[in-house]
Length: 154
Image (cartoon, rainbow, N blue to C red; front, side):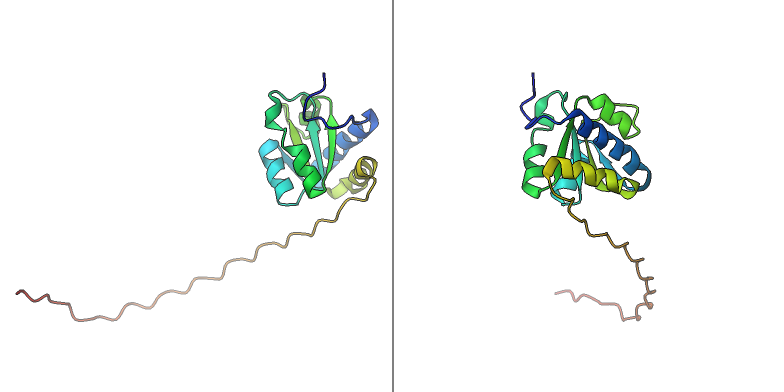
């Protein structure tokens, strides 16, 4: 029985291509693993491809992601098992959701998966500029000596 959050059936070849894209992207790109990290990536508009497992229990854990991906125009693909998804990401445990932020070496594979699922080319993600080093702190000059304040008694 299909889960309530599975909006469409992903062809097996597209699902396998998405897993291959994750394997390649984890080497030279940026991949976010886990429902919380994927949700943050999608909300911030950084994800180019989201892959969800179809066998997540309880369903409510990932139920918000398909609607969020649709709202943000981010490609979404389903894969049959969370064990396969975890292995593709290089984990020794299962994983319910993965987002590819920067594909790296997997650019062609991600583009192919996005084109097959949405019919469009993947949207470009602006590169994030590295943070500038903080300016060196200036030492404070010693405080000027002041005369002690004496309180008057009444």
